[in-house]
Image (cartoon, rainbow over all chains, first blue to last red; front, side):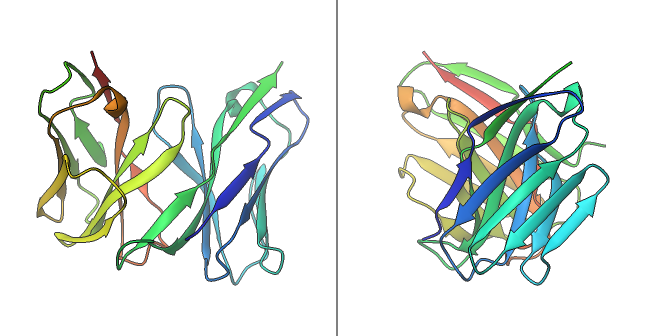
Length: 116
Length: 114
């Protein structure tokens, strides 16, 4: 089954700096990689996603890169702001271990703190 | 206007009780999910239904029984609650059944077992 590793588990940056979170996956058949942001006590919210036919995708201050050969993908946040502080989860889509459906396997999360 | 709504938001109960959590989505999606988020924030898929049919049933104790009366609703019933069931349970939905579309999460149900 799919195994998604996420690093670092915690990340502290100063406002205005960049933040990078990295994930690796094990299933070479995985082809969809979303990133979710979860603020304290709130639900996970999709911030950006990338499919395996694309190497990079940008949305304002957020970008995601994908290296299929190395099986890793990264989230880049530029010009960080205090409101970017949250837990960020990467995920990879793969066939479910036990059944006929497809599941998102999540990394263990990165707690990002942006200090003013 | 909430896209994925769960009830209740909080559930405090004693060990051994039976409880249910309800989820409804108004996005017209075909697939709905239940996730468990433990105290370490790890998000793990439990079940998934596509058009009322169970398509994912990960290694979950059979005390947990999902039910989907129609594609807009997915409920979760838990029998004989145990201390280890304390967690936040999230419902989510997405279009299609191939897992490659964005998933929209509900606000979660925080279950605390005394």
